[in-house]
Length: 384
Ligand code: OSB
Ligand code: MG
Image 1 (cartoon, helix red, strand yellow):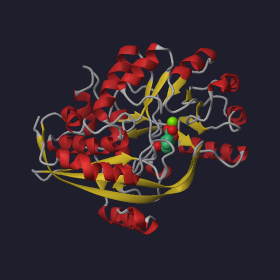
Image 2 (cartoon, protein in one colour):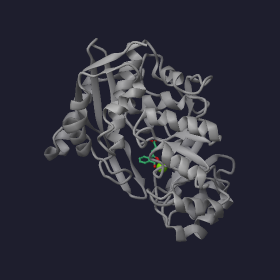
Image 3 (cartoon, protein in one colour):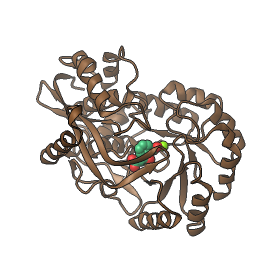
Image 4 (tube, protein in one colour):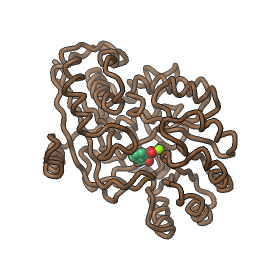
């Protein structure tokens, strides 16, 4: 394949209002903040990546300001002018800077996009080349929808109904202590046959095992990340108490974390967020481990703009991603996304990988300029 040489990189911080606030166990978010990485090669090809972060360091530790700082001060100077013959070699260039997974993943994503475009490939087909033999992209990803904590059980039932009507074939409900058994009971009673799962975003303690075991009666697809964000050990103990499969999200930040979780029986399903593990190279390694261990796998999201979502769809179209991913249609998130064309839900609850090379969606410069203005006006002291 044709190598690429990085000529320049520009950062764009965008603030984009959600259609509705999204509430999890650690609070409500009203806007998406994204740091977009625009990389230009010496051949004039541009690649885009999104640092998947939030306004508030609740899910992960990074914010728009830390992402900009780490990129501007350290990572960009280390990669400008470099030639990349294989996108899997890119992480080595920034390996001496630790942590900051969501930030490095945004930069790496721009490299993958530029590399795919430079070689006339869809990103999904580029991923396939580095997946185990025979793992051709399916060209579409089965998806579900993640529903935030609502003010009441009635509101929850109404949102679930709306999403089912829209065609989503798998429903995930956010839960927290005090908002769990009742909400699961109400939704399951109204919808006995749907694929239903819960996500606690680390709100519980090991001592809550008995309470969590009550959820076994609702025939859940899985329960996601019940215990602390940095805890693998107690998820192993909990899994032995539960019939319901434990899915890890926050706790798996690398391939090594996944090996440990597998070894101690702490995981029944993996939510792989490429950003959380530091990017697509690590994601491909994790994909291989899932294949080797027959571990059910799906791709998670963080309400990304179209740029980040497109790359996740490309990965989620790989065949061993065998449960519905948390990547919904554009109209579930934004009135006007930063990219075109929008992602639309197909009747079988899937999203198609766009036809174009790379991520296959185009950044809309006018909307990006507007979202950058919004960031500057709302957060004037943060630069942008
Ligand atoms: O835990 O999966 C999560 C969004 C922000 C932070 C954490 C999570 C989420 C979601 C959203 O559940 C899924 C999506 O992008 O649609
Ligand atoms: Mg989660």
